[in-house]
Image (cartoon, rainbow, N blue to C red; front, side):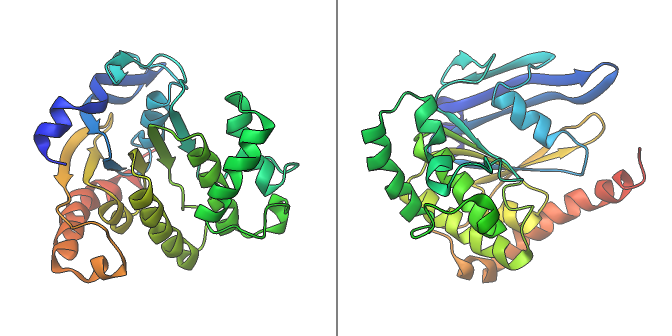
Length: 263
């Protein structure tokens, strides 16, 4: 998707957005647009407000200034068509894999017959066939995150929000899940806003990388990721991947080091 499509066909648009909690201004003057079938990765130092920004997009907390719109309509509370995948899975421990995946469908009013028809497709999509009747404590962290992803996808969202979705798993599982997510997105592309601390992950996943910097944070740069899709492990070996990763890394590193020593 090119820049003109970002501007003329945004699914999400944020203009002059700011958020404060009391006297603490978290971010200000944030502006960007996300098109259909686009992945926007958001990266920045710890404490810069990435998760807060995502929760504002989800309608869970209100902005202090500015506006967020989805398909031209202001977002003021959670709405149909938006799903979030959390870092720490967010599964109900008393529900099976099947029932966790079905939860969003039940909330949306799907009948039992519809649930029985749809959930197996998403179980298969995320690679959990055979584990439908297991409980979260019986499966690995990576499998729990697959379950959380399937729950979000099952409601067929127009916007998928991901908050450090692979941050709670080990490095090997994280890499596996990254490529699984790329495979799933290629099969069922939608608007995705992906928050991460990992520069490699941001460049691998995103069509663009939005870099937040400062306290309060603002949009320092939006980096166009001109890597071909579909992406796979071979993408990591491309010289252009290394160039983009180095560009984002050098942009962030000075501020990231300073942030470590700020309260």
